[in-house]
Image (cartoon, rainbow, N blue to C red; front, side):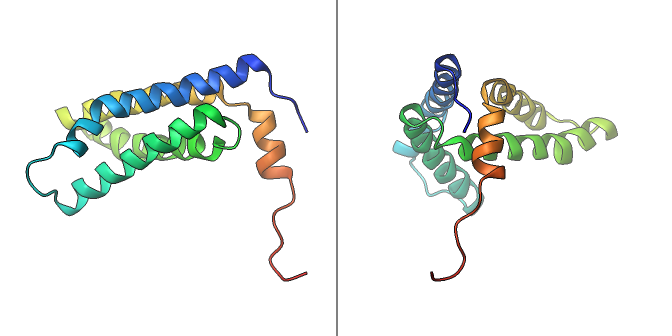
Length: 135
């Protein structure tokens, strides 16, 4: 199994910390002090982002075990950019909300830079999966 350098581990920890702090500053105040009930979509988004920030805190301690969390973040933001932002830009229908979300999603560029891809491939792709039947 490939070793992950200490520099890469600290890079991963920095990514988890940046995400956790960013969400703590942006999302947590609204979660802790919201005066009126949320709508369905707003409630789902706020709760998912809150859970994500807590899992990122766990990632600071366990950066390799929490790699699927970073991959999920990278994948959903990439899909949103390709499936929502790019068509809006191509059709000239970009509004302020889409533009703001594009910049929020662009922060995800730090994830592939910090990701230990060889470790990820060996540990999550190449490694045999858990058994499906009783022994």
